[in-house]
Picture 1 (cartoon, helix red, strand yellow):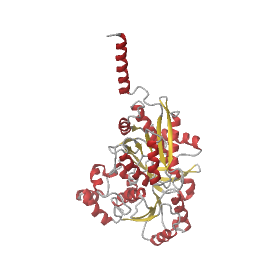
Picture 2 (tube, helix red, strand yellow):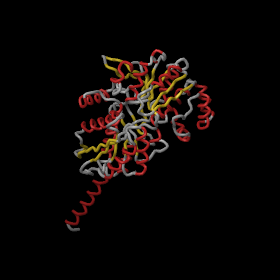
Picture 3 (cartoon, one colour):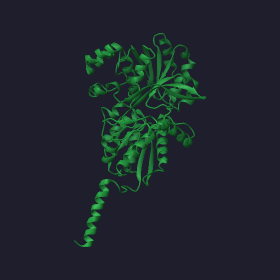
Picture 4 (spheres, one colour):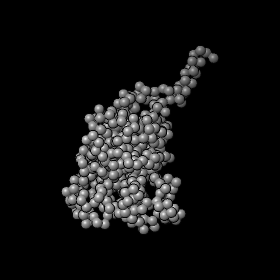
Length: 446
């Protein structure tokens, strides 16, 4: 064999080896898309995720092993049609390698449909939490390094029934998919652990006048133990303000919050009216872990304020992406390899501000869920964990019954039923009488 031919063969072998092993730089620039509302009533949800992404990138000098990373951000304006157009632009115009987002519930349900039509664009869901993104409508290219609305609140319903001793609760919330999931998860945990009734009251997504609802709550005060505010952003702030204006803090012993009520970005707006509010989530700002404390201080230095769980989602999504990209040597143009690598990521307590998590087969984290209470410490409002449930999947107490859970109707504004007798009759159809008998025998979940 001639020397020239031998060198040529060696070059071919090296090229193949480098490509297969992911040693070589696969792309000149890694192009990341971000999608979410960065204007309007839901600004905090899109902006928070984007800030988290930027912080994670800044920690790595906006590079992966020397490969520069560029972010293309698009504002959805909390509008699904706008979001779909922007997703198309990120794919066709900006040619992004993957997308982080969106942030809102109705956006997420539309985004997973887009993901199913565009399986060549990996999507890491930002903050959107409807459960069917990673359940009944799960698609391979869509992975959620976040949570579902029901996942983080199953155990809160249990806590309100068992630990707080409530029997009847009113849930007042925005009328769209994410609050529906929060109400459903709470209802399941509450009724299966000793609660008797959950009354849902829905209002328009952007409503800020709750005078008629407050009047109704006042009339029900003698019948119900507590009210759960199931809203986020400006509507939640308005709800708390009017709650006191109408004197309902004197009529009910407790106001409860859904996941987005007492988050860090909301606490300054809620003020001392938030003190004592119970809620639940997969992250709490008072977590003393080194990973969380470091994250909080870096975020404050970068943005002049402490981060909330929304920023954690952007930060963790980007950190998950980094681990996946490292696993494939930066070859983000190999979409299937990247998707596979993302799904295999495991985050430790030293790597994530929320604590350890890993992905189930549907692409949603199995993670800690914290029952939280707002306190004032050193003059600052913050959340402290009063109870921790470890390794909670998106199916919560139904992990072993996942297929049966998904065989039941998807969550709606009125499903599952909020009356205990009707609720137990309904779930018997899907979980069987043995499940009901065990609940009665154990006094709820073990």
